[in-house]
Image 1 (cartoon, one colour):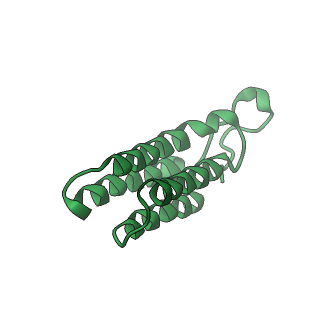
Image 2: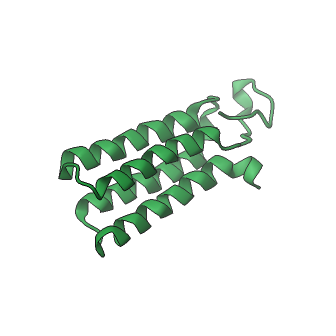
Image 3: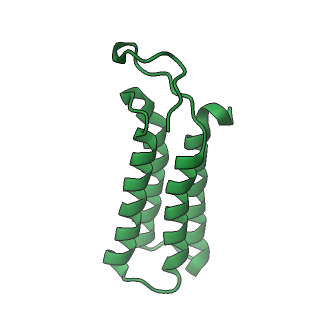
Length: 120
C-alpha cells in the first residue's frame, strides 16, 4: 500500500502533525493556524488527486508550492516567533517527504503512458 500511496500517506501524516502542533503549541488553534491546517489538508488531498493529470513530478510540485504557501502564511499573517519555526519545519518536511516517498500512478489512457508509471 505504501508503495502505491506513499506520497499521499506522507502528506496526510504531515497535515495531522500540523494540526497537532497548532493545538499543542499554545492550547488552541488561532486563525493563522487554522489556515495552515487547511493548506496542509489541501496538500494531502491534492497529492492524492494529482495522478489524474499524468505529469511525473506533479505531486512533488504541488506539495512544494503548498508548503511554500504555508510558510508565507506564517510569515505574513502573524509574523515569525519562536513557536512558528516548528510549523515551518513541518511544512518543509512535508515537501521533502512527498518528494522522497514512493507512489505508483495509473495515468489516463489518453496521455500515452503505460499503466503503473512511477510518479515523482
